[in-house]
Image 1 (spheres, rainbow, N blue to C red):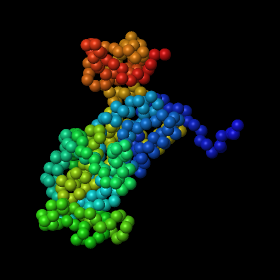
Image 2: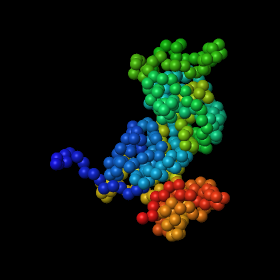
Image 3: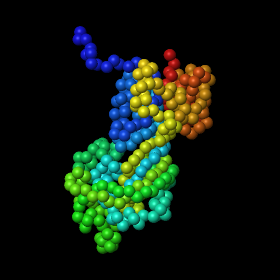
Image 4: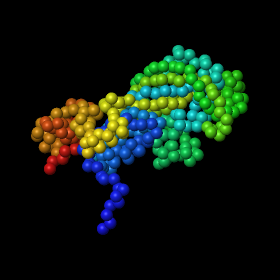
Length: 360
């Protein structure tokens, strides 16, 4: 038998089932973080509750072991973000990682007043219809939209309902952006031209070159710091795009930091360096236990021993009296099941939709 390679790292003891809330660093994909966590947790059974773009930082909720079965409920939670929107430049991806596709006339940027900004923000607040950014993970005929865009296809996604329950402007400041240079007559669309050509958009037009393809120039922009609370499925990049479109300047996202996912705030998140240091010091990665993880996501129902036994066998129990899913905990604090009230043969009962502590 061939002995193990001396270079192969020793496998860590498997971490306990539970959540780990990570403060994702910039430049890492969510899959990168999952890969690191698999090594730290000593198991491949690791998943995350909602992708963060590589450019973004902040809260990424990961499940270890049995806790991966709870992630589908966390994905649907509302989220908080701090972001910076740059008005005056539009990009192919609606964020700073995409190539510049449009630059505003400097006069259009200079004409943006706070009252107009606030009105445009108000129009993007509440229950709205949003067209997702084309460079997204949404599937179009079985293929991710971003993959189609990268293959050179034009992708048109349908608008869908989302809720922006908070869209607060924290600061507005003039700045300068570096963009590809080109013939100004080709770059700018003047308001007079737009009156003649209905297809033209005042203040915005394609730039003459891709970044790095030639000389560059500096243009005036407005950087707007915002704080938003949004429903699952909302693209903050699309909010930046639509705000710029409403103001006639174009816009994209330059900074995005997720500060909360459901019941998991940034204050409870740890960096990858902190997690690795803790796992090295203690020998095993520390996780948020299943019961505590459930408390951050669901209302809690306390069970008696008879209900614990019944649920362990997959039996239904007395209703919880709630319309949403609840976490059912044993007298000792163990997460036994997730319950949902329903009716069976005319009787209201709580059905176990997920049993995490089956009977032995």
